[in-house]
Image 1 (cartoon, rainbow, N blue to C red):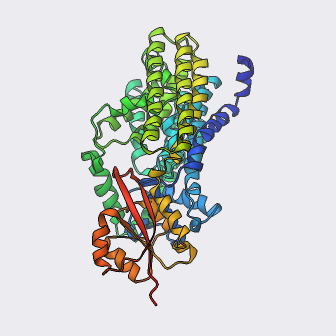
Image 2: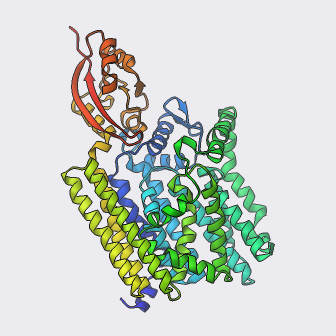
Image 3: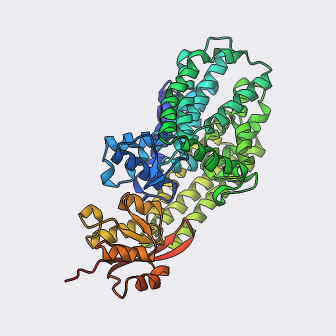
Amino acid sequence: MGRLDFDRMIAGWRGPLLAALVALLAGLPGLLMLPPLDRDESRYAQATSQMLESGDYVDIRFQDEPRWKKPVGIYWAQAAAVGLTTGPEARAIQPYRLPSLLAAMIAAFACAWAGARLFGARAGFLAGAILGASFLLSSEAGIAKTDAALCAAVTAAMASLARIYMASRAGEAPDRRHKFVFWLALGLSILIKGPIGLIVVAPAILALCLWDRDARWLKRLGWGWGLPLVALIVGPWALAVTIVTDGGFWREAIIGDLAPKVAGGHESHGAPPGVHLLLLPLLIFPAALMLPAAISTAWSRRSEPAIRFLICWLVPAFLIFELTPTKLVHYTLPTYGAVALLAAAALTRPVGVLSGRIGAGLHLLSAALIAAVAIYGLNNFGTSTAQTWATFTVLCAVAAGGLGAFLMLNRAPVAALALSLVFGVLAHTALVGEIRQLRPLAVAPQLTRALEAAALHPRQGAPGPVAITGFHEPSFVFLAGRDTQLTDAAGAARALMEGRPAIVEARDAAAFAAASDGMPGRAVAEVRGHNYSTGDDVALTVYAPVVRP
């Protein structure tokens, strides 16, 4: 296909739509193949399931415990997806992930849409494809939590803001539709994850105004109806949750969750500044080869309004995330749209020799790390089926890294990126397939199958709820039901005496036998695995109650 043919293929809305398709292909394997994950995903899914079961769409709860950490946006999106597909009784995780996959597609679409205006249709499509295929976004696309949705909202808001800013710089009147999308996306970002979207948007606006020494363009954002629109999106739920929880939601969300993350390494997730930057080449793979060129472009072309906008989107927010003591890899995802657009902008001009060489090195290193992860998983938790997937992961990662680096060194950066994207998406798909086959990590699905094989699962009409010791992970609660009893040895013994099944971890076996008064029930299955949330190996015995004459 010639360049002109390709440019015609991505003209107009087709470029953003094709970028969304890349995000779909990259994220769909994770959605379909991965079992319910611990811990956040299964907490979100279980809380959504309880909303559907109870009809209470305001007070967020996991079992009987309040889950007052994040706003309600993602729960409502998941509830809609589950309600339109399977229903909560199916206990299938895939419908809960649909909003994340759709959000990744929206993020890629918005990135391409902005890029087409800033740098042309080809650069726009490449930017959207870079974002949609990135390992971080494509991974979040297959997980039922907030981060892909937040990325979509922030990317859409910043893409619209870029269109408004560029129109103002050109002396044109901003399109009212762009202003509407900006305020709508900003309101949704607040409903999804509170102030985190504002941490990206507000510093970007402030930095632009300071750099330009001109804030007059802000008058054209439509504040008079935009702020009421945000209030209309967020206000009704905020008022309802304040009343229902007597203000408890805000105390827990701000004092119990947000403040500790800002003050220190919350929940053992502390890390020094610079970690996000070190992880960037791996997490944006298969586009790691373009990072040095993106940085060079940001510096050398900083006088251009479009580049200036992207710098102000990326740098202030990235610094804030780096300086925040609590760090998780997905925190910087709302800035990846700016990285992708800078990388695409770099491709509109020849890439420098030094940028190409450093990019090739980063690309090879990232590919090697992905291959190493696949080999580590196979060696520690693998099966014969996992070996096939691991081999394919390594081959695709090596192909993405090797071909991309070779073409970059030979001054063919567009071809290098295109082949890297293809093999990178295949490598991610194969890695997901391998993870699915690492059965020791899938403890909750194994327990569920053991209960079903013995006709002990509450879904089969057996007496419930199931009592379990040791393995108190949300994935098992999601699969076994809201009333699952997370208990100790004495509680498991009581469950058997009441005619309910019990699952006992090996460390509780002696106490369980003593509490059972010599009648611990009938062991029907044993499940061994690795709890990746705690780093511990587990051995769990499934007991059926003894039927007494």
